[in-house]
Image (tube, rainbow, N blue to C red; front, side, top):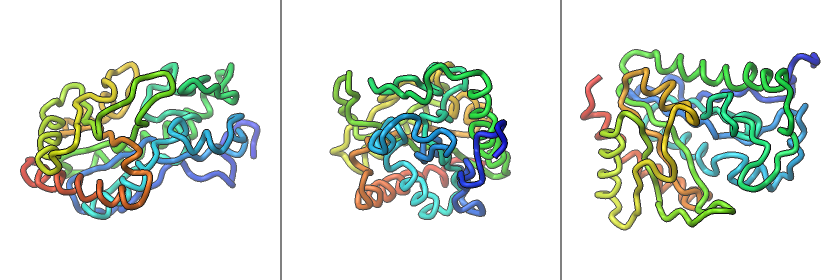
Length: 255
């Protein structure tokens, strides 16, 4: 491996395409699907337990995105590297794109990164992933795009997050409201939030302001509390729920 390269031959490609020839007029995206760390970076000075926790990836999100891609016959673009290596739903210059601390836990491998080290992560992981998303969004006939995420029930220094799921937006409020109403009608016992557990803005997000809004497609960033989708049974349940609300949305939305 050249000293100029971050990724070596033993490292996975950053992009996983699921069902790329799917016929549904929908693109699914999952920025925090993986927890891989380039061999050159070790474990970023962390334990495997840290990487397995919510700071390392969105627990259950990749499995949910893959299941949805097959259930709906839709293509999905997944990102394989840990969000601690580089967060592909943040602008690269954002403070938490390569965080030195995540949920009160230091990330030694991100301390005092050089510009060259930051650039390698951008060039070899962030940019190829964003280009893959852009290529898929350029396909004709799409009617919507949704990004699949999960969140921890409680941050170490915060209050419990009571919502079971959230639909996040910036300009396209109508799509998130419509999906939230449909999910509430399907499962009345759920607590569903709009722009929960956080707000979307251009300084700290990428999918919505940089991909979804410029595409002009109806869109939402879908957040599921990760205790619901840690296990296969929960992933299957939430695949059924989301597929149930996505299908009529796509049928009723003009191309």
